[in-house]
Length: 151
Ligand code: SF4
Image (cartoon, rainbow, N blue to C red):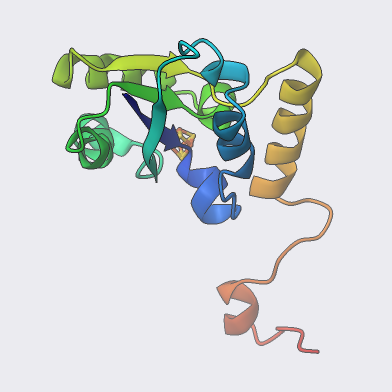
């Protein structure tokens, strides 16, 4: 039995409501970055957790806090999700920190399939979703300035 953990991007899961559907589908189908596990070896997705948000000066402590909650269940492999692989400027730093803390843990960069087209579309869409320009959400400044629009 190979035990697998999945580390996702906090921006995608917490801010943008990604429920890891694409990653789970790839795992369930043994597709994309899960296809190289031996066919006769059972695999288990032991747990999923997002990063703790962009790192600040506390990067090692923040990311290890999250990974520990998977490593504590004796996972063999940690997959970096598609969104972490293609959207996170800190992924290599994270890999180094995690490898130092958990030298036995194998790290795989990727989860569901990533074609050039899907990566480009992801980058464009993330830019708009994280900092909207088309449909700008209201916030507390609209409250303070008493201009919140209600239905
Ligand atoms: S960009 Fe990187 S550090 Fe920031 S929330 Fe996503 S995975 Fe975490």
